[in-house]
Image (tube, rainbow, N blue to C red; front, side, top):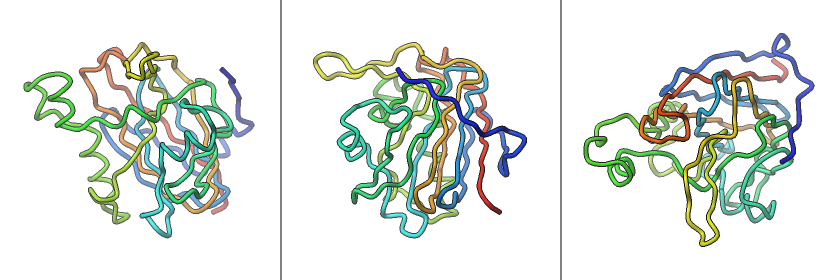
Length: 212
C-alpha cells in the first residue's frame, strides 16, 4: 500500500474550505491545478465526481479507470479516466493508501434496500450531487460513477462487496492533479447507517493550488 506525501503546504493554498458532514461542494479546477481532500476526523467518505469542465458529458468512469490502471483500488499514481478514455486527473499524493470506486454513492432507494424502510427519507449523497451540481448543469442524466475517497470496500473472492472498518485516520489526505479543466463535485457523505465511518459523518477540508 504506497503512501505518498505532498510537497504542498496549506499556507500557500488558494482554496481552503471545510465542508460539513452531509454537505456538498462544487468548484472548477484549472488544468495543472492540485486539489487535496483532508479527512479531518478519520473514516469519513468523500463521494466525488469529476467532469471535463468544457463538456460535462465527458465524465469520470470507474470501468475505464480500473482498466487503465489494472487495479480496483485507487491510490498514488492512479489515472482518473473518462468514459471516452480521456485522462481527467491523476492521484499524486495519498497518505491513506486505498480508495473505493465500485461501491457507488448512497441514494434514498439504496438506503431502503440496504437498511430498511425507516431510512427512506434520510438525506443521501445523490441529493447533494443534484443540489450542488445544478450550477454546472449537472443533473440526473450526468450522475455516473463516483469515487469514495477514504472508504474501505473490500471485494470478496467471489466478487461481492463488503463495507469494512476504514483505513483512514484523522489528518489523512488524498491529492489530485487536474489534467484538464475540471468540475469537481463532492458529497461529504451523510450516511448514518454504514459502519465504515462509525455511524458518525464528519467534516472534510479542501485545499487547492493553482494560478489565480
